[in-house]
Length: 160
Ligand SMILES: Nc1ncnc2c1ncn2[C@@H]1O[C@H](COP(=O)(O)OP(=O)(O)OP(=O)(O)O)[C@@H](O)[C@H]1O
Ligand SMILES: [Mg+2]
Image (cartoon, rainbow, N blue to C red; front, top):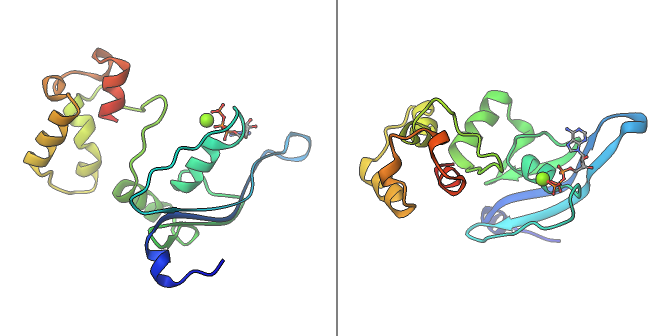
């Protein structure tokens, strides 16, 4: 396929010939084999497939949480292989939103603190009215001082 720099810009995420092999020898599992796919900016994609078919592995590679065994992952034009762990962490914090199946909220922090934590770590000052607006839209305005353990599953998901 021929792509120009222009179309490359419009790709949020791109995987080129990505393989991820877990284990060795008899235990070797190819969770992804030579997987190529690109995802255009501003689009939604649902990833479906049988249990164990590699969906989580794909998402982890695409988000820079797992380094592929081979192949290239590009996020917003940046080749993740070129980033050391510090830069990779910064890239994830600044550019990727991730709702884990188990949410991964910090249990001792309130809803407000969980929501603002990534901004705080980035040294950014939250735009108060934007935060208020988002929190209201997802129905969490009355829960800001609660702990994750005091929320329903759906509420925890929206905090994440
Ligand atoms: N850390 C790991 N070590 C070894 N094998 C792994 C590891 N993680 C995943 N696998 C294997 O890789 C394959 C793909 O796993 P993956 O978690 O990506 O599947 P999935 O499509 O997300 O499945 P599910 O729908 O059950 O969540 C599976 O065969 C799994 O056993
Ligand atoms: Mg999975």
